[in-house]
Image 1 (tube, rainbow, N blue to C red):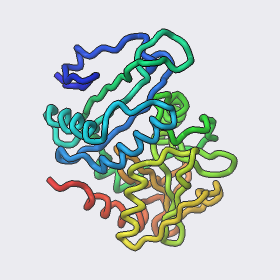
Image 2 (spheres, rainbow, N blue to C red):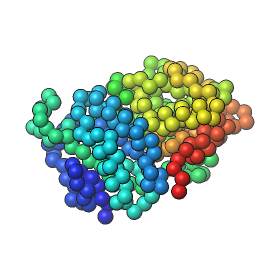
Image 3 (cartoon, one colour):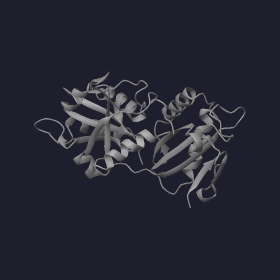
Image 4 (cartoon, rainbow, N blue to C red):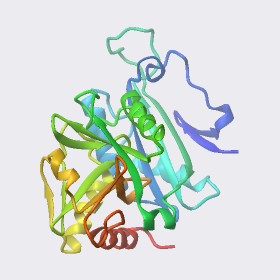
Length: 284
């Protein structure tokens, strides 16, 4: 029986219930986070909580907890699970109120948290890479908010699934943005290039980890707008996220990624970054 957290209580998931008038249910009025946990140790929790604060600020919702309180709740939930590697998902909504688009006054936020086994890519997937497809990014202009209103992302993820692909890589006005549930990075001439952390992408925590690890590993890293043409001629393409970690894209719209020597296979910069990332995780 899975134990979850809801508004101050740890309880079996079967007993957890939220009002149908919760604004998260009615409007998708809320934000969320997912923290990977290795060997019962949260990975980059401070960065996740900082991003949560950014999202809450952007939707003008007061944070119901201090960072220390969040850490206590997270570690308390982690301790109640029977598995060591976990993905802790939590969301904060604007609470329960009559249906009215305007923000309700003096309504407590709804806080829900659950933890599931962390499913990271299998070794054979890491070794072979994955297939992705492309599409025009038709989502809203506030993608830096980690909003629970994810219909645009859901449609893009299903677009990939319908084509037997893992992810949809999106472009807006001729420039790379991100994938439906991942950041996208490219490699050119031995260096990493990634879109800037603006309102058109979610500022991924794993994206940030890759930036830090690139500095440690002496891998050049440029954060700038990436033209669509650069994606098609890149030496390597990667996805990054809390569950995918760092993963090589080896085919895009059915075409192999890369050039002679590693065409259609994970490249040498990916292999170096993958090793750096694995070494950065909490040890058993």
